[in-house]
Length: 255
Length: 206
Image (cartoon, rainbow over all chains, first blue to last red; front, side):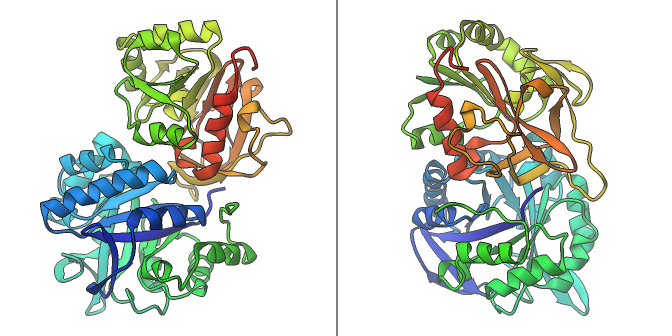
């Protein structure tokens, strides 16, 4: 059977990996390619490269890094950040990405997911969403979690899957950076309405948070995190050993 | 020299990189004539069966591939490239394949609680006999799958299976013609060890 996946996320700006708390106050870490290789060797099941560059120069640096990572790391790579057109899909796929994640691009153009799925297949299109509670309902936020779109999250995600999104990355703004655990309530609400894999993001602070996630919500397929891996607060290999001890199906690698 | 067939289907970046990582020179080519000089051939592929088969024919690669297979050149089909080796596929209709291995390709039968595509890391089981392709692997090693259709009716040629609501054909071999349903180029070190083993297979050995 398919294992639960552990996915480190590398936010890349100007050639460096960064990670903020609640999307503000970015701090530099390390060489993305080196970090990617380290994660792959320690058992990461997949990697996400997120381009948070605004300038076109930065964009080229990003795709150079992506290609270099794809030459050195042989696990699935998902790329996101600033994907707005099919040409953007094409470009990152040619640089070695296996899946492409869309977020604001899908909000700006709701036909993007469907068109991309037709050309590249559902398995290639990841719908990433930043969700926050507003007056008790889950709302989709845009622009790195700063702008309330007014869209109902459950409705938006369902529409995305119907159009051909092959996977959902659900990032809870409410728990992101807080390190007190994943947003189980939000994840439950989403994983119950979609038939495609759901990846939990936002809030993991320790190994136990992943164990709780997979034990509580068996329908969630993967856990994604950034800073706790980058800062060494959680090691991928220790996390996987603990998953195995808890009878959660996981892929172990020989180091 | 390893030759990777480029017939306009899918992205060959990772595949080429993975051969480079094991120190094996691999050439990506759209020239059918290059197949006759190859020490071994990789037939990749993603997307729809009918479209891929049409492109393989139109490019002149089908004929060149048949000639190489008859000569004994080791051939490895990957993902859709493996499915093309069979007699036919029922993906969006009924389509004829290369017929190099008998069997057909059908949608994976899954119950409502299992998702399609079968996507992610799954364990290989060799059924007691390890093919040379897996000489560096252990029973239960994980590889990366992305597919909704799988080969059936090919029992004598199955060299590895995975479990997904039932046994799923993960790899096949008939003499020098081999195929992996999963992606060795995306399966970490385990995948690289499969490609290394493939490169070590000599004409006439399997």
